[in-house]
Length: 143
Figure 1 (cartoon, rainbow, N blue to C red):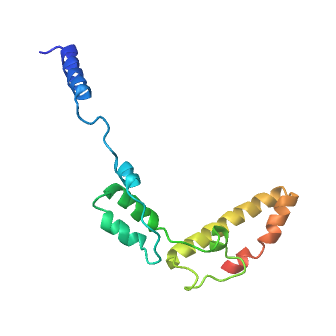
Figure 2 (tube, rainbow, N blue to C red):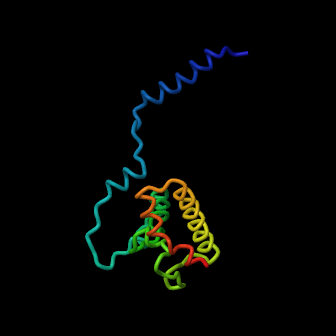
Figure 3 (cartoon, one colour):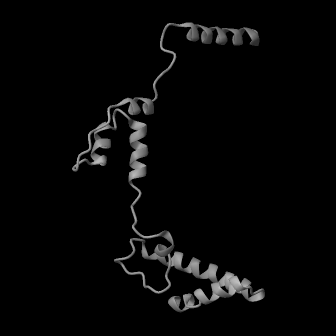
């Protein structure tokens, strides 16, 4: 049975040969190659999705990252107002959430506010009083 130290020396010898070889010691990453590519001139009709589709074979990992990132829908409203139900009704025009998901979110919000109000009623402070005043109509929306 071979000695463990001789196996280790054999592996290290292979590594030493690799390091001392005349071949390239630095392999360019996909990201490095992408950064070295010439910058495209600005064009009004440039479509980033088409560009990534055309270059996906050259940069497969970056193309997947771009696909994940560019799939995030853009919203022009603040996140607080997107999930706020006070003062407005969520309609099909305003929401693309599935009705079951919307109902679950609204119930969770109602439960969290009810829990907060219960805690506030035990020890009211000026901050808690203003919170209650601002959100007193929340349960009316759900009834």
